[in-house]
Length: 383
Length: 133
Ligand SMILES: [Cu+2]
Image (cartoon, rainbow over all chains, first blue to last red; front, side, top):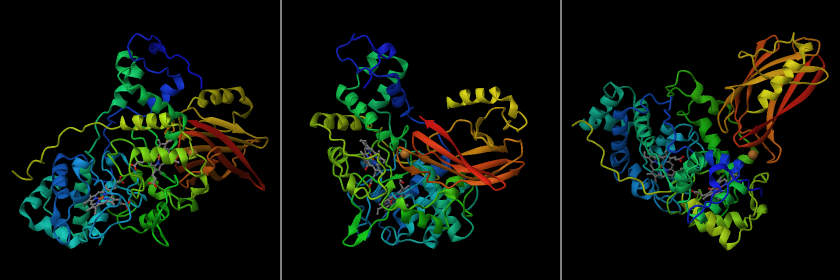
């Protein structure tokens, strides 16, 4: 490992000296920022970024009347105080589901949604739980009826969409999902100790860089050298694609969760995908991925690469198979290459970390989270 | 893409092929050639970002300055033993010019682009390497 001294970081003037970082490593670190990322507006959603749609979306997010029994809302599973997850290994709807509730932090920056990427837009993904009989078990008529008949929601709709809630049930279901998406896209995770370190390293601010714990710095070095960023790439620490890191995917004896392979079949069959009539983007650019994505044998047992920002306290992985970050690091340290189901992408291999190295890698991963600012109740729909 | 500057120099160093239209809209492009073919291309947008869709614009010629056919495009990461998760489509613009849409390099590292070209009976695979950071 060549450790070329990099510019301003050479003089050990302070009590805790940052490690020495080669130019290549500084570049690798730089790619995980800046944070927060520039705003992105989803062109497939005509109300994305609209303040009135965001308010409507937050009300709908907390609205149990969207569900068949009037008892379940999005917030039942995506709990703000739990980093927009639920802290369970597997989500609990009307019965236990096969997968973990993912965090919704930074979800507006994703391009495939769900652990299997069955959704190609945030709004399409927001329709799934409304209709799924194991979750909110609702239907378009119920959602449309609520928007038309509830005075406050109808008024909120009119403000967000510039017209009274009209058109068919399915169109109104999609509009509700687009408001839900506008709201969810505002959930940007806070800046973290890692971000402060990254920015300090880039600007040559030694003093600020030195505030980043040494254990985290050593862990960051392991993260770079183990090539975790091949998949956990960029500011969100995910390339947004799919991988198999050897997590068992039996759901019950004799049944497997085929992950991405099934996700692509669902995507192709969905009325709500970006090639369909509900895409508001006339340019067609937003549908590029959907149009060109291919279904591969290796997709069997692949799951979406999760972001590593603000992951919460676990459990982890698509089915909550690993309880803590320590367990995750142990997994990557000891993973049996024979357990990898796909045609063995040689990217995941047992790292054989020492106890100290494992602790360092965990320390680094923890610096990708921070205390989010307190949330306030949304303003009323139509005061 | 630091490769660009180096390959641009190549274009200038081989004036013998100046008849093959190498101008791909912005006066810049990559050029690769074999004993039979000359292929000029550039990404659109010019900078390929990890995980972001991009297109490739091609001019395909034979060494004797005839337009040739672009038959297929594929890309692999040789070290990781995998290809792209997306299947690009080739649109012919006439006169040996092509546009390839739907490319996505979803990981940083070395990608090898395989370019299958054909003129008459003779087909050939040319390749080009990108290092994505
Ligand atoms: Cu790869």
